[in-house]
Every structure is written in C-alpha cells, then in structure tokens.
Length: 368
Image (cartoon, rainbow, N blue to C red; front, side, top):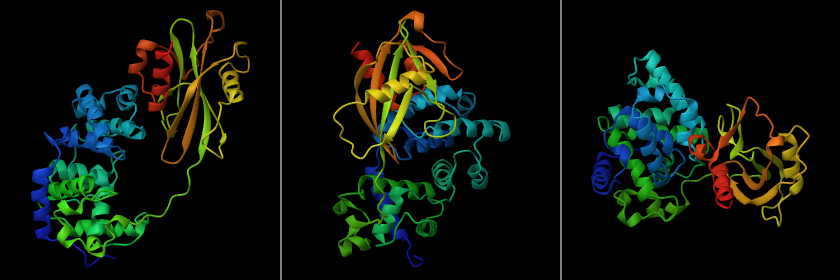
C-alpha cells in the first residue's frame, strides 16, 4: 500500500525553505535538549499550542531539569498539569524520569529501543524527541503529518484503520531525508498546523502545492478520510462544594488509575445518560443523593444551594455539571477519610484539579 509514493528531495528543499521563513517562535524551539522537547511533546498531544505555552513555561520554571522532574512529588506534577487533561501523561513523566535517573545515570538515552520502553513513550514521542533533540533518523507520524501525506498523494483510505496508519508510517520512513530528520519532521508538522489545516487549507501559499495530487483533483478538503464516530453519550452530574465554616473545602482524591487519576476533586455523583443535552432545570434529587453519600446516609437537614450549570466535553463523553453549595456548622463537620482533605481557599492553587472543578470553584467563591 502506497509503496510508490515518496517525498522527493526537491519537495523537501521547498518545504525546508518555507519553514525557515515561516516557523513560529515557540519556547521549546530554543535550547533543544531531550528534556525540553520531551515536555513540550507530552503537552502538545491533542492540545493547542496557544494553550500549552504558559503551561510549558510554568513547568520548566518549577522543574528545570530531568533530575528535578525525577524527584518531584506526584501532587506537584498534577498541580502543574492541572487543566491540560490526559493526566496519565503527567504521571508518566515522573515515572520515566525516575527510570532515567536510576537506570541511565540521569542522562536521556539515545537508543530508540531503550527510549521506547520508558513509561509514556510510544512510537511518535520516541521519534519526535530523538529526531528533534539528537538528530536520530526517525520519522514522526501525527495528525498533521497524516493530513499532509494524504493530501499530497491523494490517499483515500480510512486513516483510523491500523493497516492504513502502518502504511503511512512506512511512507514517512521512506520519505525521510536521512541526516535531516528533525528538520523534516518539524517542517512537515508545521505545514499541517499552519497551511494544510483540517478545514480550509491555504493551498495558494503551500510550498508543496505544485505536486499536491489532491489539489489537482479538487478534493483536498475531503482528505484525510475518517470513519464517522458514534455520538458521544452525555451525562448529568451533581457536584458539591462543601464548606466547613472555617474556610475549608472538602476535596476527594480520584483513584490513581483511570480518567483524571490521582487528581483532587469536589465530591460528585453521576446520573443516567441523557437523551437530550438541553434540560430546563437541575435535578435536586441527584444532589441530595450525593450529599447523603458524603455523610454516609446521615446528611445535614439543611438543603444545598444551587450554584449553576457547566457543560464539559471529554473525548468520549460529555457532562452537564450541576454544582451545589452547602456551608455546614462546626458541630456537624465530619472527619475526612484517607482519600479526602479539607483545603483552605488560598491553598487551591497548589492542588492538582481538573479544569471543570477549578471553573466551578472560581465561580462559586467569587460570588460569595
């Protein structure tokens, strides 16, 4: 599949000249150490560049070296990552850094097979870090590269299929200009980000437009071909802001495994999947069930106060978050459990929490 396709040296030269002129000034493009490239690549997966930049700067300021990362507490990593999503990536950063310190003397390995075995390193991250920081001849394949290749060679196959992705990886490997892997990879990704965009590609300024087969066929906007995803389920979820009368807010730690693993969160309870997303009013019964669960079946007689509704989308489902607030007297304050804690308002910035919980807290505390 696609065995006859290959980016020519002439096309690479045009692309490299374009990149030298148009490349964005991004903080991870200065001092390209494996550590700096690694952190940027972990953050950039499925996250916009504009979002990543302040996180990247804050992370590097707090943990400026691989050694500092290897000694950081998980709570510190989750707090620095708070709001980026995909929190397993943050935990894997710490795990991989400890492996590098303990098994490789604190020096980032150069052998792709060794790097590939580090926690959190798949084929893409391995190729990106080693090619961009060490010049290792490995071709990356991400969404931008897939889009450019499919349009350039007019490849009309479902790119969600494993066999198609393997064929595209082989095409990228075959096309790579050995000795210039970092430049090839970065310029191809930059072209996909700035010019060969998912919708409305700017073909008139593309350095590869003269040889673009899908443009000649007039269907560049139709590629790459992807199987339509099934509709995502949508759930109603009650969220409780419980205050203890002394400025303390009750937080629970999520299980280490699974979505948002290890983060602290406001107590919550998810209801049934919804048939429609636009509902006229919050469901108080769900909030009362949540309150009863927090107090082990003996909740305070005072009802919680409705704060507001927030919709939050994840990759596989969506949530209608209905937040409630209850301030309790000292006489009814319960002891926190092993995975719970009372946190003062001024301490919230030091706690790893999801973006949705931070939004709920910001709105609720500002209104007090």
